[in-house]
Image (cartoon, rainbow, N blue to C red; front, side, top):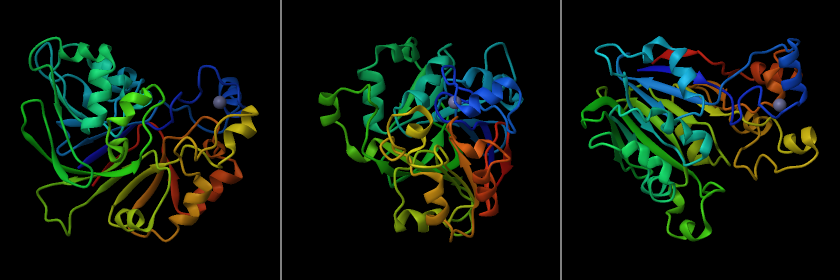
Length: 311
Ligand SMILES: [Zn+2]
């Protein structure tokens, strides 16, 4: 299995268009000790030919152009992108679907509740259904394994399992609609592995970019993974209020702070541990900061756009 990090920042990217925090200001001034980043986007492939997107970032167009594995290969209209896997209905996670509206068939794997929000409440997504067999939607339930399939329904050789994480639907969703949705489907993380090897020995990716809290059951599941891409949104719970003088806490926004994750996941041994989905205000973006050093000395890495691994 191949894994590519196309984008490693949280929503808004780094720098963010309306932000003049110390990080964004220094980056624009050319004095920052760290890299710019596009909004979180990961792609996985069983064979380097067919690719599945984990979410669909608002930066997807430029991310595809920056990664030649995702270029069309044959004919006038073609794409190696076989499908998209949705963890939630957040704008930063689904907006890129609208950038894939040029009548190219692909499959979207999404929980039924997420599909209802996008397809029944947001008429713009009808752009993905303009012709027959354009986008095919597949349902999954948290906790059950399912194969990632292309538009024609062919099994890619990758198997996935969603892990329920949060009961909070996006703020744009109406209160009435929320009453009709399954709480366990609001936001999930994913375990993805090649399906051809046996369960005990197969290499596994854990994709968890938005984690509100950690419990012992999830921690023991994460220990069974080889690469962990984990929520690196905020360093501290009060980061936004310290930077901009107000705003929600990290936890209120559904993100466990990095400084707490370092303690809670200190015992993880098997996976390569990587923080992803990093907000522009996070001090770990500055490679010379004490927070960045603390993360690295704890055995974690800080994702950058363009990283890739083979499992
Ligand atoms: Zn900023």
